[in-house]
Image 1 (cartoon, chains in turn yellow, brown):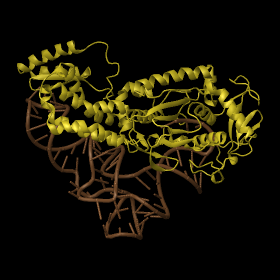
Image 2 (cartoon, protein in one colour; image 1 turned 90 degrees about the vertical axis):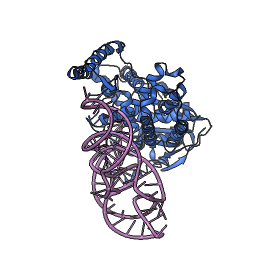
Image 3 (cartoon, rainbow, N blue to C red; image 1 turned 180 degrees about the vertical axis):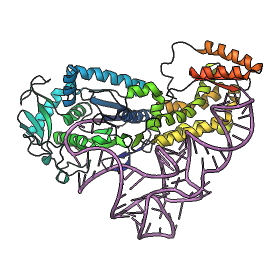
Image 4 (cartoon, rainbow, N blue to C red; image 1 turned 45 degrees about the horizontal axis):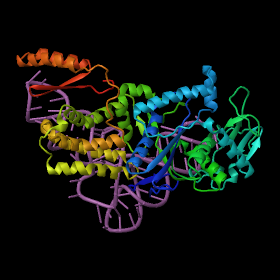
Length: 481
RNA sequence: GCCAAGGUGGCAGAAUGGUUAAUGCGACGGACUGCAGAUCCGUUUCCUGGGGGUUCGAUUCCCUCCCUUGGCUCCA
């Protein structure tokens, strides 16, 4: 197992990671409430922790990665009512769409997506325990957590409840003893999905579902908890209060990771603000690799601003430069290069190819610095550029060595996956016909005709590039021009 | 008001108690090309929010102020 450091938001410091029971690592990330389509802010968090899990697995840890699904809450009920759908069915439908988007994005590392309502027995048991221990009290069919009873409340967020402004959004619900108390079991209104309980029919509150799930799946204490920065308070604070009060064991989590928010023109992207950019639509326009590159090109804790017409266009250019040599390598390997007995790499370059994956691991081993890793990959591309004219002479072993840093990036960053879907039709014969005609035109000096063919192919999404007599072609990268 | 995360070149965005502060995008010049594209070489000198302090040396550590964003019980 490789040693690495990560920034822990609870201690506010970068710490060496030590699992509770190596090599196992429990990773829990707050998932989604699937009442609407996912946007590119959700996807940033998903990609962030996907890379965390991928890196840990590469480094020899056995990661159990759980991401919960809040499939029933006020939003789900409200949206279900608007659409005339049972909230739980709506959740299933939206969640299926989310899974499909994640698959497109290459987010493949999650082991389990538990649904909140599948843990109602655990939630009820925990609620009962909290009432018995005096941390929670029933009121009008609901059960509230009494924040004042938990001495450590605020240790994650630094919030102290007496310093908080009684904001307009703090509903002073009649049943609460104090405004900061939060509901863990909510009395159901007629017609809402509900479960029987000692306090009457009801359904789970928000914060408790995560702890009920993790106490069941991960035990009283586990290694890593992640989520978007906006969840730090009150949600994660609430989780600590609930779990540690229930078990008497602390800390619930050894390392807290919070991903920076994606902003749009400097403002947080959020469903409630209506300034969202849809994930599916973005994947359609730019493809998964460009989007992943955009995220990973910044540190996961930094705020990342999305600018329409600029951010992904720039990412596409940069990513294109990164991936072009790989396309050449793969082409050589595909067309017989793999078994070729050609020239070997210069010793220096060969040594660099061998050392690079380790250096890439080093970069990620300090709080998952994906930007540093990408900078190293660009350095590699520069070296490959110097070699460009002689690729077709290289041996299979040399080509394999040139590809190895890309394999690292594919495994850990999830970049350079094989092209998504692609066309079912192999275009090459058609393109070759056009290129043959262009070659004849060039041979007889009819450059106007040659340029016309090149331009028409470009309009059709095929880029033609000459190398002396020979012409290469490739598909234009996804994205609006 | 309180809490948290940020403020680095034209733009995006890393890093570090110490030679020229990565890398990319863009721009400009050159090589190559019929022209492009891709690639290579070069340029883009004056870039670390303001003010104090510690230090031989601060962008980095400390204090303070300013600004931006997020949170303060809906949120990735």
